[in-house]
Image (cartoon, rainbow, N blue to C red; front, side, top):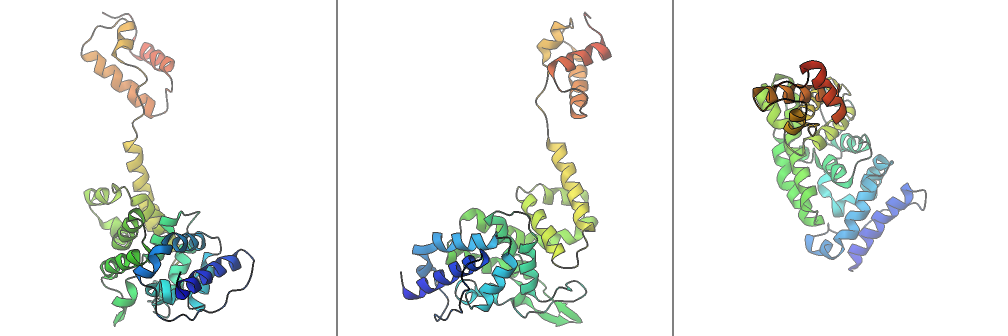
Length: 289
């Protein structure tokens, strides 16, 4: 292990130790940021410690320590670049992009490492898209984030699932702002993405880290829950053989009975095979030929 890599890893480990109530870390001075080639042999250890910090209950303090001790300069200069980048106060009363990002990760509820990394990188495109036109703007920061995330993933050798989630969240989180204006089909296509659940979790934290108004989030959460409920199809309680045993001959009545039982099951009116048979007897009778 090179002296530079050793100092960086020791510095990150010292931050984690401090969060756990142990020794106070010291500022890091090792030169230029680490290259993918330098981090490769130690990727697992580096990412493991970062994950522990990002999922720690004191992650907000941890990220500021990584900033103040110069550690971000060597592992995540793209995150360091967020510091001091102001945001429009009408949307972000919390302050600059770095503080917003640290708060976003902080407001996650028991996240795994993938979700924490995606939250950390969701606004990574803001520093390079900052401009003032009537107000502070970050037009296209969701698109600008993609090559930056790929560069970070190469440097830290993030696994493909984490990288995919980070890119998805950074690319798509701004679309949620227009959810109430979307046509139902377009919103459904957004919700159907297998990563949407994680996006929704991060967007909630994103809102809490800024203006705090969860109205749009609750609207989308309700739509997402409706979609999930519509996709749930409990295993059938009965089959055509059960209907035959009740005395029915195969025919159109089979579909009518099976559909009725399915609806009753989905409404929570029947839960077992026995209850389903009782439901048929009550609503359709028995021993019919």
